[in-house]
Image (cartoon, rainbow, N blue to C red; front, side):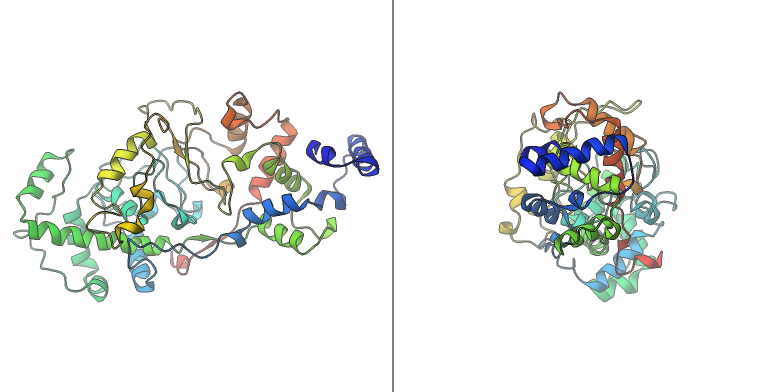
Length: 422
């Protein structure tokens, strides 16, 4: 509002000032038409945040099956399949639940055991360039493979994954990718993978012939590419905020017709103005997709996490990255990886800015679930006013209420061409 007063002059400023004084003594529920009047610059910001600005899904040149409906249908089956785990009780959907906007409700996700981070939201994730909280994968299909061999998540090997596909999904797989070999144990060990955390599995992997390893890797990669094709279909639908932007764009200003409530509109003004939330949460997914160390408190009983700094080496050495032999991309199609920022100091303890779409539906918050509620998150940001990157002004309790109300207005159903099957 202060920004508005600075832009106004004469009678206009007097009118606004009179409204402010009037609202102090009469806290009525109705907003005036002026509250729904935005400058051209503000309208441009609103349009940039609207889902209409999202555009079509970006092409993934590293995955030739990314937009194949049959691959997506197969990937969906794999996503919800709990045979891909050491106890046959964990699937991708265990930590990415439909009823929690494809996250879970835990501070730290739990698969075969408790992990050091919470699950990331999958809504609109296909628009990202980097995956996981630290960006240690550069494609959605590469990201899908990581948890399978992680002992804390699915806890099985790539050879076991090939066995499971051979036993339960042979027809689905062969229709897409061609014939599978006979996975008899004398030909392919069930627990073999190139990992230093399991000497027996590593030994079994080394003893396999190069041809056998190539067969298993190719099946494993096709599994990841199919899961990625499904996850690409998990998209946000228009929220109350998006419908409000449509109203503003159409010239609607009558308070009784507006989609957003008084508090939500006030929170929106704070979000793009005084609170400076758009410094990091910008664009139609409300994220700059970058990595930041915002000084979060250390989680009890969790080892210090280097975040993006450690992930840079991991993504560069990942056999399944965009420049690897299993990528379908030409090297020129991998600019993010080729020109990656390798500044370890800059990214020490830094984590990805998550989307704010459906944020109210998926507590707790931050990479290790440090905060149980949105209010705790807002209180944290208010306490960090001395951090130049996080300077949000001197926000009052009422303004925090308004910001929280606006964040709820970003909730919407999830669109997926076959999300309803689960």
